[in-house]
Amino acid sequence: MANPLFRRPRITLVVLVLISLSLLSVSYRGTPPAIVTGKGYVRDVVTPLRQALTAIVAPVYDVAAGAFEYGTLKRQNAKLQNEVTALRNQRIVDRGAIGALAALTAVLHISFAGNVKGIPAQVISYTPTNVQLSVELDKGSLAGIQVGNPVVSAYGLIGRVIQVSPHTASVLLVDDPNFAVGVRFGTSGQIGLAVGQGATSDLTVQLVDPGTVLKKGEVAFSSGLSGEIFPPDIPVGRVVDAYTPPGGLEEHVDLRPVVNLTALNYVAVMRWLPPSP
Image 1 (tube, rainbow, N blue to C red):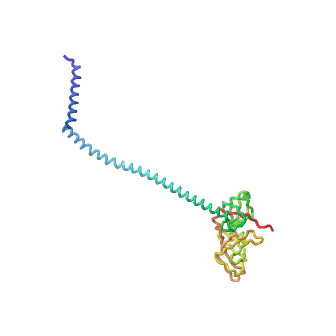
Image 2: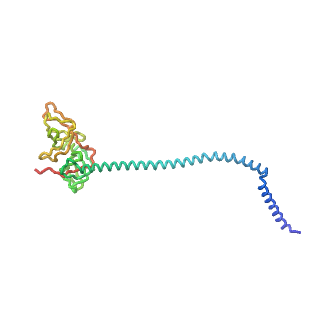
Image 3: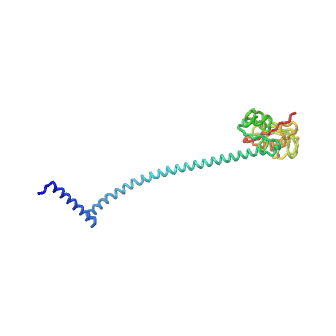
């Protein structure tokens, strides 16, 4: 008689083999109706859950994706704006450099200077006060500048040097009330003395014979007469008004400086001094 301990594993093994064969038979012959029905029940239960889960998750995903894309677009937009700003600033710098180069080139080639050499310098400060209208230059005696040197731009007279240090120089402007320059009008040859009247004011020309015909826009040049502190033929200003006052002993003439004294940058200090008496 067989031992029961050995009989049970055999029976178990036989059962397992039969079940395996049954499963293989099912897989080959098709799925039984009961299993199909079970699958249908499962699908009927799972499908609504999947749809509900999709309805919940999809908006959250869309919001998350949209937030990510918005952040990316925002960063890209900020980067583009920074690049545009940098390009715009570079264009401004380039235009400024071109303008400065043009101004410097102009003061190095001044037509009215003749054989008089010029020392290029840059205005570093403007000091309008109730006492004096002047500017400070970035060069001084070490560059060869001396007190009394005329200072000009490419357009005409700016002033004259009144004080010098080794590295800087002070220039009295033509509109200062203490400034005066002998002038000559081109058409008539009439001479006079142009005197400053203060900041943003026109110069007044004194000692012009009454009845002298002067046209608006006519240019007055430095006269360069004997004893004059400026060389001849430097443009000083344009006539803006000229008339003979009733009973006047001289013509009233207003002269506007040819140089914009409020926008000075590069200038030329002329290596010229009045002749010794």
